[in-house]
Length: 321
Image (cartoon, rainbow, N blue to C red; front, side):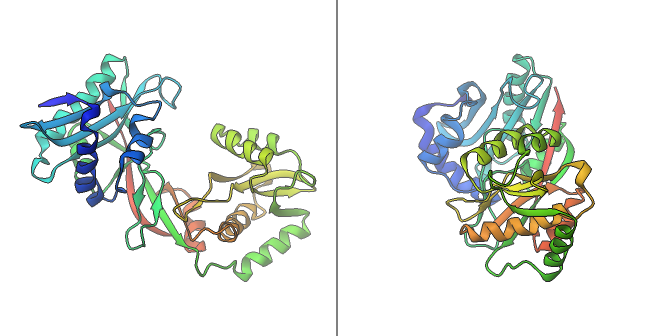
C-alpha cells in the first residue's frame, strides 16, 4: 500500500532512513536534519513524498521535487531518493515508488525525470574510511547501489558519472614546483592572493565572463561581505578566482568553484589557485576537502596531482516521460 507523506509518520521514516540509507553511505538523520532536507525545504511537497506500508508499518520512502525556477525546472522533475527496508527491497517495490513519482511529474506537465546535482534537496553522505568526514550533497545516485540498477531497469539512462574526491589536509603543504610556478606568474605581472577591495577590481566583470550564475551570485556576495576568496589578478584586474574558503561544522573546507577567464589561460593560474585554495582552507581550520567532478573532466588531473583520491562514483541519470 502506498500513501503520500503523513506528518505523524516522520519519526518512523527517520528510523527507516537510519536503518537503510546509512548502509548505502548517506548520513543519518534526526528531526532537525529531516526538516532541513525535506519538510522545511521550499521545494518539498507532500504530494511528491510517498510511504510504502505493509500492515501499517512503513517499509519504504520515496521523494521527488519540482520547481519552475530550478535548472531544467520547466521541463523536468527531480527524483531525490528511494529507500526500502531490506526484506522489501524488490524490483516490484522500486517500480511502484518510481512510478508514483513519475506520474506526479507527468501530471504537472514535465517531460523528464532527472537524477541530478541541481536537486535542491541536498543529501549529505559519509566518506568511507574516514572519521565521519562528510560531503554536503550527493550529485546523483550512488553508482554501486541497488537503486542505480533499478533505475536502469526502469528506463533511466546514464548521462554522466560524477567522481567524488577527497583530501585530508593534516599534512598538506604547497610543493616547491607550485611556488616556482607562482614566482614565474609574478614575473609576468600576475598575483594570486586573497581578494582585497583596496587592491583588486573588476571581479564583477570576471564573473560575468565565466558565465556561471551560481558563481556570480555567491562569489559576488563574498567579495562584498569580506568572506575570503582567492583571486588571480593582472595589475590589480581580477581575472580568476577560487573559493570562498569556509570551514563547515563538519570540518570540511567548503568552496563553490574555481575559474579563470579564457583570455588569461595558459599561465598556470588555475593550478596555482587550486593549490593555494587547499592551503587557505587549512588556514581557516578545515581538516579535509571533498569535491565532485565529471569522470572525463581534465581538471581531475590537477585534483589528483594535489593529492585528492576518488572515493565514490555517482550516476547522473534521466528518463524521458
